[in-house]
Amino acid sequence: MELHRNKQLVRRFVQAINERDEAAVGELASGELAERARLWVRPFDAAFPDFQMAVAALVAEGETVVAHLRCSGTYEGEWLGIPPTGRRFEDVDEIYVFRLAGGTIVAAFGVEDNLTRIRQLALTVSGPGDHAAEVS
Image 1 (cartoon, rainbow, N blue to C red):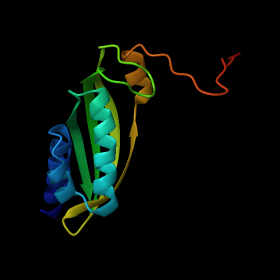
Image 2: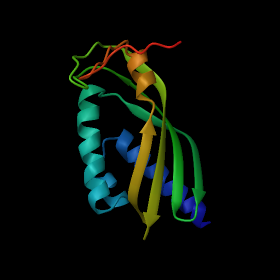
Image 3: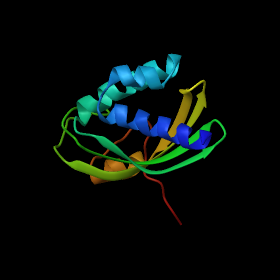
């Protein structure tokens, strides 16, 4: 039963982010993680105001829940220093590992498929020292 509760906690956390409910994010996550989540959501919401994350799968073991999320949104504000295009990205895979303690989420780390997101948005992103690689 505890594993089910842990997965439900992560599901509610994702729902709170989807609803931009900062109070609920603060109740479901503790301390620094709650603040970091709010600091992540604000700029992403400014760039993609309709973004939503769908839960594709949740796997729980002990106090750890792994979430496979699919994120979609419309590019309506600056992101990565690039002006908006109005294009959408759909079902971009994100994998997050959440650590729970005392009925709250206390830590999280994740990997997002930003390459697919950038491709779907038809963006060109370069950085200092970028160069074409040759493949033989």
